Length: 389
Image (cartoon, rainbow, N blue to C red):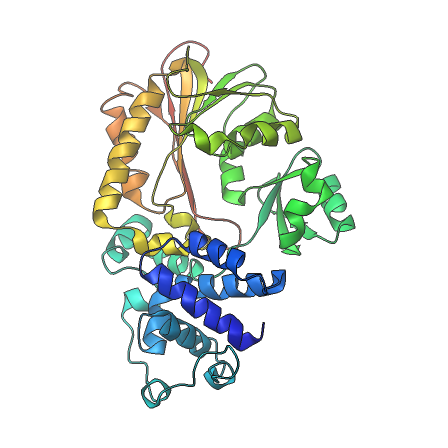
Protein backbone atom coordinates (compact mmCIF):
# COMPACT_ATOMS: atom_id res chain seq x y z
CA UNK A 1 0.00 0.00 0.00
CA UNK A 2 1.14 3.52 -0.72
CA UNK A 3 1.19 6.09 2.11
CA UNK A 4 -1.90 7.65 0.57
CA UNK A 5 -3.75 4.34 0.51
CA UNK A 6 -2.83 3.78 4.16
CA UNK A 7 -4.23 7.21 5.01
CA UNK A 8 -7.46 6.42 3.15
CA UNK A 9 -7.83 3.15 5.04
CA UNK A 10 -7.26 4.96 8.35
CA UNK A 11 -9.89 7.55 7.41
CA UNK A 12 -12.48 4.85 6.71
CA UNK A 13 -11.67 3.10 9.98
CA UNK A 14 -11.92 6.35 11.93
CA UNK A 15 -15.30 7.15 10.40
CA UNK A 16 -16.61 3.82 11.71
CA UNK A 17 -15.07 4.39 15.14
CA UNK A 18 -16.43 7.95 15.42
CA UNK A 19 -19.85 6.49 14.59
CA UNK A 20 -19.56 4.27 17.66
CA UNK A 21 -17.83 1.03 16.64
CA UNK A 22 -15.00 -0.25 18.90
CA UNK A 23 -11.59 0.55 17.43
CA UNK A 24 -10.14 -2.94 17.80
CA UNK A 25 -13.18 -4.50 16.17
CA UNK A 26 -12.98 -2.10 13.21
CA UNK A 27 -9.27 -2.66 12.66
CA UNK A 28 -9.58 -6.43 12.96
CA UNK A 29 -12.41 -6.49 10.45
CA UNK A 30 -10.44 -4.29 8.04
CA UNK A 31 -7.32 -6.45 8.38
CA UNK A 32 -9.29 -9.58 7.51
CA UNK A 33 -10.94 -8.01 4.49
CA UNK A 34 -7.86 -6.21 3.14
CA UNK A 35 -5.96 -9.26 1.92
CA UNK A 36 -3.74 -7.01 -0.18
CA UNK A 37 -2.35 -5.37 2.96
CA UNK A 38 0.89 -6.77 4.35
CA UNK A 39 1.85 -6.81 8.02
CA UNK A 40 3.66 -3.48 7.62
CA UNK A 41 0.56 -1.93 6.04
CA UNK A 42 -1.70 -3.18 8.83
CA UNK A 43 0.68 -1.87 11.46
CA UNK A 44 0.92 1.53 9.74
CA UNK A 45 -2.86 1.91 9.45
CA UNK A 46 -3.30 0.87 13.08
CA UNK A 47 -0.70 3.44 14.18
CA UNK A 48 -2.43 6.20 12.22
CA UNK A 49 -5.83 5.35 13.68
CA UNK A 50 -4.61 5.13 17.27
CA UNK A 51 -2.53 8.29 16.98
CA UNK A 52 -5.60 10.15 15.70
CA UNK A 53 -7.74 8.79 18.54
CA UNK A 54 -5.20 9.78 21.18
CA UNK A 55 -5.28 13.33 19.78
CA UNK A 56 -8.88 13.34 18.64
CA UNK A 57 -9.74 16.84 19.87
CA UNK A 58 -6.53 18.63 18.92
CA UNK A 59 -6.36 16.83 15.56
CA UNK A 60 -10.00 17.67 14.90
CA UNK A 61 -9.31 21.33 15.67
CA UNK A 62 -6.30 21.32 13.34
CA UNK A 63 -8.21 19.47 10.62
CA UNK A 64 -11.40 21.52 10.86
CA UNK A 65 -13.82 18.72 11.72
CA UNK A 66 -14.50 15.51 13.59
CA UNK A 67 -14.70 12.85 10.87
CA UNK A 68 -11.88 10.55 9.82
CA UNK A 69 -10.67 12.81 7.03
CA UNK A 70 -10.39 15.83 9.32
CA UNK A 71 -8.62 13.77 11.99
CA UNK A 72 -5.96 12.46 9.62
CA UNK A 73 -5.52 15.92 8.09
CA UNK A 74 -5.21 17.43 11.56
CA UNK A 75 -2.77 14.74 12.66
CA UNK A 76 -0.52 15.57 9.72
CA UNK A 77 -0.64 19.26 10.56
CA UNK A 78 0.12 18.63 14.22
CA UNK A 79 3.21 16.66 13.22
CA UNK A 80 4.34 19.31 10.75
CA UNK A 81 3.86 17.10 7.68
CA UNK A 82 2.41 18.35 4.41
CA UNK A 83 -1.06 17.03 3.69
CA UNK A 84 -0.52 17.53 -0.02
CA UNK A 85 1.76 14.50 -0.19
CA UNK A 86 -1.04 12.15 0.94
CA UNK A 87 -4.26 13.90 -0.13
CA UNK A 88 -3.56 13.57 -3.86
CA UNK A 89 -6.54 11.61 -5.16
CA UNK A 90 -4.14 9.37 -7.04
CA UNK A 91 -4.74 5.62 -6.90
CA UNK A 92 -6.32 4.83 -3.55
CA UNK A 93 -5.21 8.03 -1.82
CA UNK A 94 -7.72 10.49 -0.29
CA UNK A 95 -9.05 13.13 -2.65
CA UNK A 96 -7.19 16.46 -2.80
CA UNK A 97 -7.95 19.09 -0.18
CA UNK A 98 -10.85 21.39 -0.81
CA UNK A 99 -10.28 25.14 -0.69
CA UNK A 100 -11.96 25.20 2.71
CA UNK A 101 -9.72 22.43 4.06
CA UNK A 102 -6.59 24.00 2.64
CA UNK A 103 -7.46 27.41 4.09
CA UNK A 104 -8.49 26.21 7.55
CA UNK A 105 -6.77 28.05 10.38
CA UNK A 106 -6.65 26.58 13.86
CA UNK A 107 -7.92 29.02 16.46
CA UNK A 108 -7.00 29.13 20.14
CA UNK A 109 -7.58 25.78 21.80
CA UNK A 110 -9.36 25.28 25.09
CA UNK A 111 -7.45 23.37 27.77
CA UNK A 112 -9.58 20.29 27.12
CA UNK A 113 -8.82 20.43 23.38
CA UNK A 114 -5.11 21.00 23.95
CA UNK A 115 -4.95 18.10 26.42
CA UNK A 116 -7.26 15.89 24.34
CA UNK A 117 -9.71 15.35 27.16
CA UNK A 118 -13.54 15.40 27.22
CA UNK A 119 -14.79 18.69 28.70
CA UNK A 120 -16.71 17.04 31.55
CA UNK A 121 -13.74 14.89 32.54
CA UNK A 122 -11.04 17.54 32.81
CA UNK A 123 -12.19 18.92 36.20
CA UNK A 124 -12.26 15.38 37.63
CA UNK A 125 -8.72 14.67 36.47
CA UNK A 126 -7.53 17.98 37.92
CA UNK A 127 -9.27 17.30 41.22
CA UNK A 128 -7.73 13.82 41.30
CA UNK A 129 -4.15 14.64 40.32
CA UNK A 130 -3.63 18.33 41.08
CA UNK A 131 -0.48 19.66 39.42
CA UNK A 132 0.20 16.20 37.95
CA UNK A 133 -3.00 16.33 35.87
CA UNK A 134 -1.56 18.12 32.83
CA UNK A 135 1.59 15.97 32.54
CA UNK A 136 -0.59 12.86 32.84
CA UNK A 137 -2.99 13.98 30.12
CA UNK A 138 -0.13 14.99 27.84
CA UNK A 139 1.44 11.57 28.35
CA UNK A 140 -1.82 9.91 27.30
CA UNK A 141 -1.53 11.67 23.92
CA UNK A 142 1.58 9.62 23.08
CA UNK A 143 2.14 5.97 22.28
CA UNK A 144 2.61 3.67 25.25
CA UNK A 145 5.88 1.98 26.05
CA UNK A 146 5.85 -1.83 25.84
CA UNK A 147 7.00 -3.60 29.00
CA UNK A 148 7.66 -7.24 29.76
CA UNK A 149 7.71 -9.05 33.08
CA UNK A 150 10.70 -11.36 33.32
CA UNK A 151 10.16 -14.67 35.08
CA UNK A 152 13.28 -15.46 37.05
CA UNK A 153 16.57 -13.89 36.01
CA UNK A 154 15.81 -10.59 34.25
CA UNK A 155 19.26 -10.35 32.65
CA UNK A 156 18.95 -13.87 31.26
CA UNK A 157 15.53 -13.06 29.81
CA UNK A 158 16.93 -9.90 28.21
CA UNK A 159 19.81 -11.87 26.69
CA UNK A 160 17.42 -14.47 25.29
CA UNK A 161 15.28 -11.76 23.71
CA UNK A 162 18.35 -10.05 22.29
CA UNK A 163 19.34 -13.30 20.57
CA UNK A 164 16.00 -13.04 18.73
CA UNK A 165 16.51 -9.41 17.77
CA UNK A 166 14.25 -7.94 20.48
CA UNK A 167 16.11 -5.19 22.32
CA UNK A 168 15.19 -4.32 25.90
CA UNK A 169 16.53 -2.40 28.86
CA UNK A 170 15.84 -2.92 32.56
CA UNK A 171 13.32 -0.70 34.29
CA UNK A 172 15.15 1.39 36.88
CA UNK A 173 12.53 1.02 39.64
CA UNK A 174 10.72 -2.26 38.96
CA UNK A 175 13.00 -5.24 39.38
CA UNK A 176 10.99 -7.58 37.14
CA UNK A 177 10.33 -5.18 34.27
CA UNK A 178 12.02 -4.88 30.88
CA UNK A 179 11.26 -1.99 28.54
CA UNK A 180 11.14 -3.07 24.90
CA UNK A 181 13.08 -0.61 22.74
CA UNK A 182 13.12 -2.49 19.41
CA UNK A 183 10.98 -5.08 17.60
CA UNK A 184 8.08 -5.18 20.06
CA UNK A 185 5.86 -6.79 17.41
CA UNK A 186 8.07 -9.90 17.42
CA UNK A 187 7.50 -10.67 21.10
CA UNK A 188 4.53 -13.02 20.95
CA UNK A 189 6.09 -15.10 18.19
CA UNK A 190 9.44 -15.29 19.95
CA UNK A 191 10.87 -18.42 21.54
CA UNK A 192 11.52 -16.46 24.75
CA UNK A 193 7.82 -15.69 25.06
CA UNK A 194 6.80 -19.21 24.08
CA UNK A 195 9.02 -20.68 26.80
CA UNK A 196 7.46 -18.41 29.42
CA UNK A 197 10.60 -16.40 30.10
CA UNK A 198 8.61 -13.18 29.70
CA UNK A 199 5.01 -11.99 29.81
CA UNK A 200 3.53 -8.78 28.49
CA UNK A 201 2.67 -6.67 31.54
CA UNK A 202 2.96 -2.96 32.17
CA UNK A 203 5.63 -1.82 34.63
CA UNK A 204 3.16 -0.07 36.95
CA UNK A 205 1.08 -3.21 37.29
CA UNK A 206 4.25 -5.17 38.04
CA UNK A 207 5.22 -2.60 40.66
CA UNK A 208 1.88 -3.00 42.40
CA UNK A 209 2.34 -6.77 42.64
CA UNK A 210 5.85 -6.28 44.05
CA UNK A 211 4.35 -4.05 46.76
CA UNK A 212 2.31 -6.94 48.17
CA UNK A 213 3.85 -8.86 51.10
CA UNK A 214 4.04 -12.57 50.31
CA UNK A 215 5.39 -15.67 51.99
CA UNK A 216 5.31 -19.32 50.91
CA UNK A 217 2.04 -21.16 51.30
CA UNK A 218 -0.32 -18.19 51.47
CA UNK A 219 -3.78 -18.78 50.04
CA UNK A 220 -4.40 -16.05 47.46
CA UNK A 221 -7.51 -15.13 45.47
CA UNK A 222 -7.34 -13.08 42.27
CA UNK A 223 -11.00 -12.06 42.40
CA UNK A 224 -11.29 -10.19 39.07
CA UNK A 225 -8.68 -12.25 37.25
CA UNK A 226 -9.53 -11.51 33.62
CA UNK A 227 -6.68 -12.92 31.54
CA UNK A 228 -4.75 -13.79 34.70
CA UNK A 229 -1.84 -11.36 34.51
CA UNK A 230 -1.88 -10.60 38.24
CA UNK A 231 -2.21 -14.27 39.19
CA UNK A 232 0.75 -15.16 36.98
CA UNK A 233 2.85 -12.34 38.46
CA UNK A 234 2.02 -13.52 41.98
CA UNK A 235 2.93 -17.10 41.09
CA UNK A 236 6.26 -15.93 39.71
CA UNK A 237 7.13 -14.25 43.02
CA UNK A 238 6.43 -17.02 45.53
CA UNK A 239 5.07 -20.53 45.96
CA UNK A 240 1.42 -19.79 46.74
CA UNK A 241 -1.94 -21.46 46.58
CA UNK A 242 -3.57 -19.25 43.95
CA UNK A 243 -7.19 -19.26 42.88
CA UNK A 244 -8.34 -17.17 39.91
CA UNK A 245 -11.97 -16.04 39.67
CA UNK A 246 -13.90 -13.77 37.33
CA UNK A 247 -17.56 -12.86 37.01
CA UNK A 248 -17.22 -13.68 33.30
CA UNK A 249 -15.31 -16.98 33.07
CA UNK A 250 -14.74 -16.43 29.34
CA UNK A 251 -12.13 -13.82 30.23
CA UNK A 252 -10.05 -16.58 31.85
CA UNK A 253 -10.15 -18.86 28.79
CA UNK A 254 -6.46 -18.43 27.99
CA UNK A 255 -5.25 -18.64 31.59
CA UNK A 256 -4.62 -22.42 31.69
CA UNK A 257 -2.33 -22.20 28.66
CA UNK A 258 -0.58 -19.11 30.03
CA UNK A 259 -0.07 -20.80 33.39
CA UNK A 260 1.33 -23.92 31.73
CA UNK A 261 3.76 -21.83 29.70
CA UNK A 262 4.91 -20.09 32.88
CA UNK A 263 5.11 -23.28 34.91
CA UNK A 264 2.54 -21.91 37.37
CA UNK A 265 -0.19 -23.75 39.26
CA UNK A 266 -3.36 -21.67 39.30
CA UNK A 267 -6.79 -23.06 40.15
CA UNK A 268 -9.78 -21.56 38.36
CA UNK A 269 -13.04 -20.91 40.19
CA UNK A 270 -16.09 -19.86 38.25
CA UNK A 271 -18.92 -17.86 39.84
CA UNK A 272 -20.50 -19.94 42.59
CA UNK A 273 -17.46 -22.21 42.91
CA UNK A 274 -15.41 -20.23 45.45
CA UNK A 275 -14.98 -21.80 48.88
CA UNK A 276 -13.14 -20.85 52.06
CA UNK A 277 -11.29 -17.68 52.88
CA UNK A 278 -7.91 -16.30 51.85
CA UNK A 279 -4.81 -14.67 53.27
CA UNK A 280 -4.72 -12.20 50.36
CA UNK A 281 -7.52 -11.16 48.02
CA UNK A 282 -6.48 -9.13 44.99
CA UNK A 283 -9.15 -7.01 43.33
CA UNK A 284 -8.08 -5.51 40.01
CA UNK A 285 -11.44 -3.83 39.64
CA UNK A 286 -13.26 -2.97 36.41
CA UNK A 287 -12.72 0.75 35.91
CA UNK A 288 -12.57 3.58 33.40
CA UNK A 289 -9.09 2.45 32.35
CA UNK A 290 -8.08 6.10 32.24
CA UNK A 291 -4.49 5.31 33.18
CA UNK A 292 -4.16 3.13 30.07
CA UNK A 293 -5.87 5.32 27.48
CA UNK A 294 -2.69 5.43 25.42
CA UNK A 295 -3.39 1.78 24.62
CA UNK A 296 -7.19 2.03 24.24
CA UNK A 297 -7.74 5.66 23.26
CA UNK A 298 -11.28 5.15 21.96
CA UNK A 299 -12.32 4.26 25.54
CA UNK A 300 -11.60 7.86 26.56
CA UNK A 301 -14.28 9.15 24.20
CA UNK A 302 -16.83 6.46 25.11
CA UNK A 303 -16.74 7.16 28.85
CA UNK A 304 -19.71 9.19 30.13
CA UNK A 305 -20.63 10.53 33.59
CA UNK A 306 -23.34 7.89 33.89
CA UNK A 307 -20.94 5.11 32.94
CA UNK A 308 -18.43 6.36 35.51
CA UNK A 309 -21.13 6.35 38.20
CA UNK A 310 -22.04 2.78 37.24
CA UNK A 311 -18.39 1.73 37.52
CA UNK A 312 -18.05 3.28 40.98
CA UNK A 313 -21.13 1.43 42.21
CA UNK A 314 -19.73 -1.80 40.75
CA UNK A 315 -16.36 -1.24 42.42
CA UNK A 316 -17.98 -0.75 45.82
CA UNK A 317 -20.01 -3.92 45.37
CA UNK A 318 -16.97 -5.94 44.32
CA UNK A 319 -14.96 -4.71 47.31
CA UNK A 320 -17.76 -5.86 49.62
CA UNK A 321 -17.84 -9.30 47.98
CA UNK A 322 -14.04 -9.63 48.08
CA UNK A 323 -13.76 -8.46 51.69
CA UNK A 324 -16.01 -11.32 52.77
CA UNK A 325 -13.31 -13.71 51.48
CA UNK A 326 -10.47 -12.25 53.60
CA UNK A 327 -9.64 -14.29 56.68
CA UNK A 328 -8.74 -12.61 60.01
CA UNK A 329 -5.29 -11.10 59.74
CA UNK A 330 -5.56 -11.18 55.94
CA UNK A 331 -5.34 -8.42 53.41
CA UNK A 332 -7.42 -6.96 50.58
CA UNK A 333 -5.44 -5.35 47.75
CA UNK A 334 -7.65 -3.03 45.70
CA UNK A 335 -6.22 -1.98 42.33
CA UNK A 336 -7.33 -0.02 39.30
CA UNK A 337 -5.71 1.36 36.17
CA UNK A 338 -7.65 4.60 36.69
CA UNK A 339 -6.45 8.15 37.31
CA UNK A 340 -9.66 9.23 39.03
CA UNK A 341 -10.08 9.59 42.79
CA UNK A 342 -13.73 8.55 42.50
CA UNK A 343 -12.52 5.08 41.49
CA UNK A 344 -9.48 5.06 43.76
CA UNK A 345 -9.06 6.95 47.04
CA UNK A 346 -12.81 7.51 47.43
CA UNK A 347 -13.47 3.77 47.46
CA UNK A 348 -11.36 3.28 50.60
CA UNK A 349 -13.44 5.30 53.13
CA UNK A 350 -16.59 3.75 51.71
CA UNK A 351 -15.13 0.30 52.37
CA UNK A 352 -13.96 1.26 55.88
CA UNK A 353 -17.43 2.55 56.71
CA UNK A 354 -19.06 -0.65 55.48
CA UNK A 355 -17.69 -4.09 54.61
CA UNK A 356 -14.21 -3.30 56.00
CA UNK A 357 -15.27 -1.52 59.19
CA UNK A 358 -12.53 -1.79 61.80
CA UNK A 359 -9.86 -2.71 59.25
CA UNK A 360 -6.58 -0.82 58.86
CA UNK A 361 -5.83 1.06 55.62
CA UNK A 362 -2.22 1.40 54.50
CA UNK A 363 -1.16 4.55 52.62
CA UNK A 364 -2.24 4.08 49.00
CA UNK A 365 0.15 4.25 46.05
CA UNK A 366 -0.33 5.91 42.70
CA UNK A 367 1.66 5.45 39.53
CA UNK A 368 1.32 8.24 36.96
CA UNK A 369 1.27 7.53 33.22
CA UNK A 370 4.68 8.36 31.80
CA UNK A 371 7.57 6.66 30.07
CA UNK A 372 7.98 4.41 33.11
CA UNK A 373 4.50 2.88 32.91
CA UNK A 374 0.75 3.41 32.85
CA UNK A 375 -1.41 5.09 35.45
CA UNK A 376 -2.20 2.70 38.29
CA UNK A 377 -3.53 2.70 41.86
CA UNK A 378 -3.11 0.36 44.82
CA UNK A 379 -4.80 0.45 48.23
CA UNK A 380 -4.28 -2.25 50.87
CA UNK A 381 -6.77 -2.94 53.66
CA UNK A 382 -5.79 -5.29 56.51
CA UNK A 383 -8.41 -7.20 58.48
CA UNK A 384 -7.76 -7.41 62.24
CA UNK A 385 -6.75 -10.81 63.54
CA UNK A 386 -3.86 -13.11 64.27
CA UNK A 387 -0.89 -13.58 61.94
CA UNK A 388 -1.43 -10.54 59.71
CA UNK A 389 -0.25 -10.81 56.13
